[in-house]
Length: 303
Image (cartoon, rainbow, N blue to C red; front, side):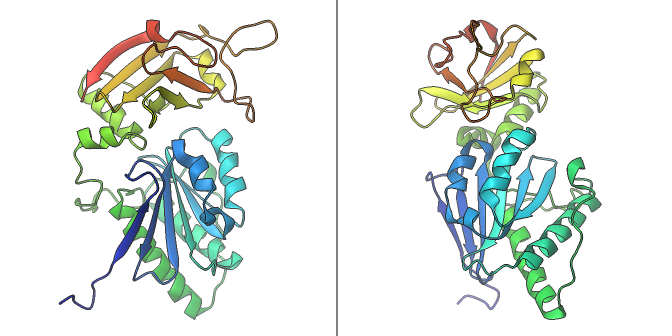
């Protein structure tokens, strides 16, 4: 017989695995809903009903978080695709019945900002924002319970950025998965890929472009900032079909963006400062520009 504290948790995996959009509901969470997606699947997330509601969103890397809120989550998150290049995944906290008010999301945002700031995980752009509004004592209890359950569910799927590393316990759904499986999952594994490369003597920083083999196994897709062409540009290709990480280094100013009379990499049609990079999985040529990236392969590491 289940005890009084038992709960059921429903996960909807939009791509059939942990690599795409996830929706979570919890029997102890009343009408609460959590959506999670890696950066590469943000467009899929923005097409869900979650982005039509009032809610709080979190831009996440392994060690940092940006907390925001909006009544138009789709537009706001889209702005951050261009404005911030460090984040690797996004979480949306909302409700099934769209019952959160503007004051509610102001309150939730402010509490999460304070929590992240207190343990040194808050993005620097976020530190002067998040004034806590006044809510009555009954609503504050409700919102406190809402956040408690949201933090529990985030930890369950491996999001520990709000946890003090000194006291965090292991044993979450994601932390119990070995690194080889995490890399095979692929889309949310940039931090794990960098860590794995480091363990194998290859130093790569977080500015590297990360692309996982697409579901049709024909190409690696990414939208890196065009500014990277001015630097020594590191690209990590995760071939999770052949269980291999491929590291490329393109020297600074070796490539350029296409323009009138000049051949080069193509920008996204809607965002000219982003490269529309589609590297063929066999030839390593960019499918749009025809540029051959195979000459820039530095390392291949099996996992």
